[in-house]
Image (cartoon, rainbow, N blue to C red):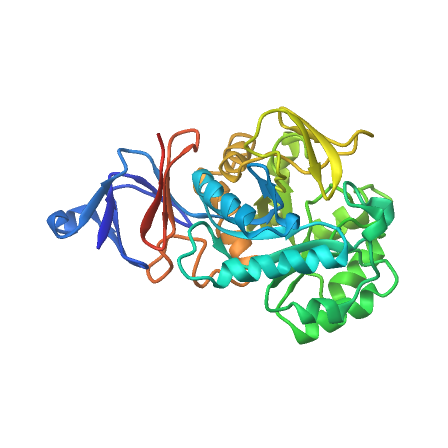
Amino acid sequence: MKCIVNGKVLLKDKMAEGVAIVFDEKIEKIIPTDEINLSDYEVIDAQGKFVSPGLVDMHIHGYLGADVSDGDVEGLKLMAKGILENGVTSWCPTTMTVSKAEIETAFDCVRTLKNCDGYYGARILGVNSEGPFINPAKKGAQAEEHILKPDADFVKKHADIIKLFTVAPEVDGATECIKQVKADTDVLISMGHTNATFEDAVTGVENGVRHATHLFNAMTALSHRSPGVVGAALSNDKVSCELIADTFHVDKGLFGLLAKIKGDKLCLITDCIRAGGMPDGDYTLGGQPVHKEGIKCLMPDGTIAGSVLKLNEAVYNLYTNSELELYEAVKCASLNPAAAMGADDEIGSLEEGKNADIIIADDKFNVVMTILDGEIVYRGK
């Protein structure tokens, strides 16, 4: 049995000091430090740093040169291990709009890794299938030749591994697809890469859409006479919203406003691509060329193509550009995405009975230790 002491513990509703977290594979108890005998435990001294729940990245395509859509188990392992250093303990490997055969190969690879013995790396919750059921008018960095008509049977066929998928609610066949997936599965339905009107988006929500893919990006904007998908997502309490908080995809001046409007429905994501954790230079995304320079990833025509954001950086960016307390910013990258996907009974917050997924981070939220299922899986240098 292990015990973390001397930390600023970020609970879901406050920051607590003078408490100890006792855990094995699960969190056994969180109690005042002076009420336990430390000699009974393997003690981890947080040295005054922040103790946080492990982060949950529900939208990440690649990292360290690997890409989920490559359909390569070794690449997935590289990603899963690498993101532990960013405090991510649970994730959804995210596919692109590539060919149907490539998507299914990627699904099979995620299945293989998720179900294998001795797997080392952040916990796989399931696949985030971003496309191929999108609108070509808002394809962004997605390959138009692989865009397909929404197909509920495809989603249902792979519902064992798909945790969420993106659909443009206005395209032909989308309404029936949304209705069927909502009725027959537990898959989270997200609207994104969409040219929908406000009314189209509202209809999508009425039929089962409960999430918005990277809010503001690749969707109709908010205007006072045409609220668009952004307006529909912000105004409906049923809809959780992703935010790429790298300060490039969305201006940091909006971070605090989004947090006030969406509250527990705001979910930080990275939308990271294979260029993440790599030097500046030329890479690919969904088979298309991308150039990385600093925090920007652009296609030759200037289209934004994913990010190189780390989720712990997203937390810090939200915290420093809003009025949120740090524990509230952390929730946007832990409990909120876990709840959106129906996984908050086991992960997302430091509570008795939940998985012992814990990170220790410094004042700038750089991760110095990651604990997964009670085992130390990363120690910072």
